[in-house]
Image 1 (cartoon, helix red, strand yellow):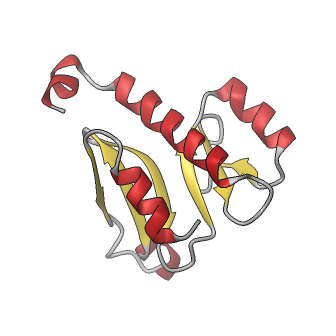
Image 2 (image 1 turned 60 degrees about the vertical axis):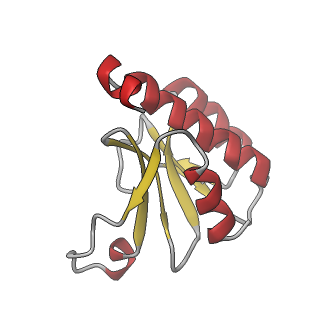
Length: 121
């Protein structure tokens, strides 16, 4: 999978939009981070220049199992390690599994939105 395929998949989910919220930070890696949102909450982010991993929300119980199963899944970079995981591309996590985990992250965030926000989407 490449950045365009990944981006296209994320944007195919209902009500998703993207933005790069860290354009003013000193760290170049962070400046190149593209975040995907549903409502006003992000569910995934990825560096568009390096495209090394995506960071997504995850059920804490599932997170432990996934990290035991895949070396390409680690605690979330710069995020709450209980609720976020980093999923590395081009390692042992198949592309279809990455898409499945992105969709689950989207679902977790979507369910946390207010009724009004969900209806607006």
